Length: 466
Image (cartoon, rainbow, N blue to C red; front, side, top):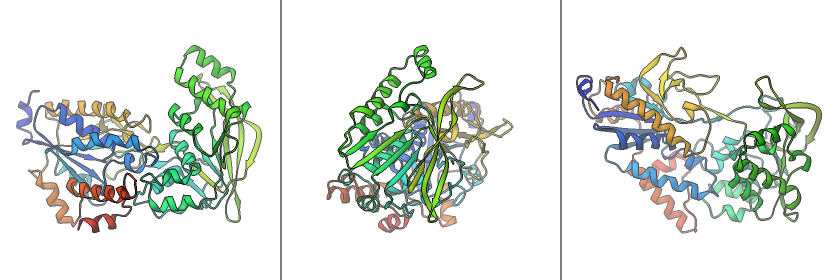
C-alpha cells in the first residue's frame, strides 16, 4: 500500500471509531486488524456497558451455542490496538463532530433496533407489543427490563414467520424448567413460570414455502416437550404458483422445511399442555379491543397471486376469522434509527451508502464515514452474514486510506477521546471493566448450573465496578 499521500495528511497510527459493538462492529474491527498494512488503532463504542449487541440481547437464551461466537470477538478485543468504550451513546454523550475531532475514519454499525408496525386498527392497545421489546426484555436488556407483558392471558398471537417470531413463540410455550438452565433474566423466568399462556398462534401472510424461519428452528419446534405444534392442512398444501417456482428453481432446504411443516398436521404431539398453532396464508386486519386492551385479532384469508412484476404475493380474499387472544407480538421486519448528524433514509430505515461509504440522500460521499451491517443493508441474513458485509466496507476504508481520503482530527493522539469523555463527565466501561462484569456474571451462574446470571441495569453494573 502506498502511504506517501497519507503521511502529509495525518499522523500515524490511523485512528478509527466503530459505533456499535454487535457482530458487524467486531467483524469490521477484525478485518481491519487483519488486512491493514499501516498502524491503526480501533475504538469500539456502544451505548450499553456490555458488548456483543444482539448476540447478548437478541439471541434466544435457549440457543446458547450460537453465543459461542463471542469467543471470536474476544480475540479481537484483546489486541493491543483495540479499545472498548461501553456506556457511551452517540447523540447523547458524544456528537459526530466530537468523533471527527478524534478519528480519521468513523464506521456506523448500529443495526436495526426497532420493529416495523402492522399499520392496522388497534395496534396501540395495551397488550400489543413488538417482538423486539419482548426479546430484549427476557434477555435482560437494561432499556427493556421494566417493560410489562400480561402473561395471565390464555392465548397470544405472533405476527410473522421469521426466526425472531419463532423464538417468541417457542419461549412462550417452552417448559420453564428448560429456561431455568439458561442465561435468561431472572425476572423473565419468574414471569414465565407464572404464565397462563397455553396457546400461541403464529401468523404468516404467505404459505409454508415462503416462511422465513430456518430448518433448525422448524426441527426444534417439533421436538419441544409437552408442546403441540399444529397447522391447518389446507394452509400448508402448496399452491400451483409455488409448485411452479420450486420446479423452476429447486431448493432442497425449502422443500425440506415444507415437508417438516406438513408433518405437523398429522404427527403432532396431541398430549401437550401447550399449543403452537401455525396459520399460513392469513394477514391481520384489526386488533380488537376488550375491556380496554387486546381481546382478539381479526385475520383475513389470502391466496397467492403474481403481481405486475411477476412476483408471488399474498392477495386478500373476503373470508375473515377472529382469533381470541389477549396478547399480540408483531415481528414483520426491522428498521434502523437515525443518528443525529448522520444521513438517514427514513423510508428504508438505513444509512445511505455506496460500497460502504456513507452518502447524502443526493448520493454525495461523506468524507471519512462508513457503515456496515443491518444499518447499511437492512435486516437480512444471520450473524455470520455480517462478516462479508463488514469486509466489503473495510475494503473501501483501506482504499480511501491509501489515497489519503481521511478526516483530519484536531485532537492529535489516542488520548483525545478519553480526555473528551472525561471533560464531559462520562463514566465509560473499558474492556477490562467488561471482563470483570463477565467474570461476576459467570460465577453467579456457575453456582446455579447456568451459563451466567446477567446484570440487567446500568446502575448495578457500574456499582459493581466502582
